[in-house]
Amino acid sequence: MSLSNSDTAVSSPPRPDARLAHSRGGAVEIVRVDSRPQLREFIDVPWRVYRNEPLWAPPLKSQVRHLLDAARHPFWKHAERELFLARRQGRAVGRVAAIIDHSYNRYHDERMGIFGYFECEPDQGATDALLAAAGDWARRRGMTFLRGPMNGSTNYELGLLIHGYEYPPTIMMPWQPPYYFDLLEGSGLAKEKDLLAMLIDRSHVTSPRVAKLVERIKRNHHISIRTASRRTLDRDMELVKEVYYASWSKNWGFVPLSDDEFDESARQLARIMDPNLVLFLYHHDEPAGICVIVPDMNPLLKRLNGHLGPIGLLKYFYYRNEVNGLRAILFGFKPEYRKLGLPLVAFAHLEELLRKQQKYHYLELGWNLEDNEDINRFDKEVGAREYKRYRLFRRELMAETAGGTAKAR
Image (cartoon, rainbow, N blue to C red):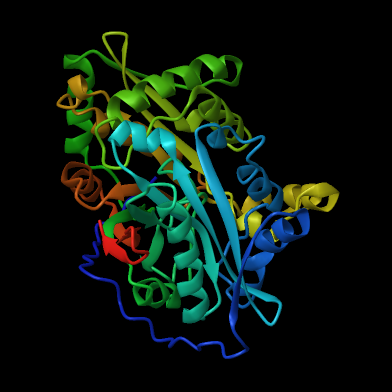
């Protein structure tokens, strides 16, 4: 693996060149999704919005359907949702999911409503109506503010791309056209938090001085590393959960996955993971840190265009060599071991490992919280650069008074 020394500082998103082309095709109709045909229509909206966007990586429709299945997906055991379509003259021009994650609200003692699965044509009126419907649904259930875009919780896909539109998305990260920023700001949403994606390419090699430092850290602190194994995957995933909760529990927006959610996520990861890219770091034989990296399957997802099936399987075998990048989805260390230099050890190990696997050309690190100065500084010190920025928005909800008017909470 090689790294880049370049860096990009981003203070605010660039203003998109595209202006919103407001639809004038009649009034906006907001429809609650309560039938299978409407659910298909809801799932299909992005294929209309992104039909001329070559960078977009379509998700598998079956996976989206599973994520939204309130009877089957474990997230909905502690959450509820309502799906809305925006139509003009009977044609769907946008969608949104209104969500309440009761697990998050208990964990943080908040009353947060979520808007997720948001997609819309460049139509401010439709956006306003969708977000009004989501906010009203959440407010009527006692929520005091709306946050998003977030497809469930911070454990799932989230954020609006506001910088780095020229780069394709990596797996489990969104890509939206620039006009989305204007749509959300135009609907009265304001910045709450930015998330960063950092890029490492093949142009940097760890210096001999750093290599000697890594060996000294490993020797002096009795650090060892092992990779995952498919034979012990269940046990390895339990260890990932242990270290993940210990290292992330104090982070902004964190909410623990339920056991069923974690098992579901582990099953999904097992389908694409390379066990050699899942690292466990030990201090005196005690688990101290984890690094979970997965191949960026998005080039293949673009080929599949939302469908698997027999033809999709043929495409998988024919185009799998186009998968030439990686994304680090978990990188954490237990608090008591954070001053031992473990991140440097992990990166040196990855560099050596990936140098032997020439098929991988890049590694995305993220997402990182914009104000997590320690991890952002470390990423830059090892050669990463900020190349994408995502935003979470917030809007306070209004409470109805006895007289039927509204007041701010």
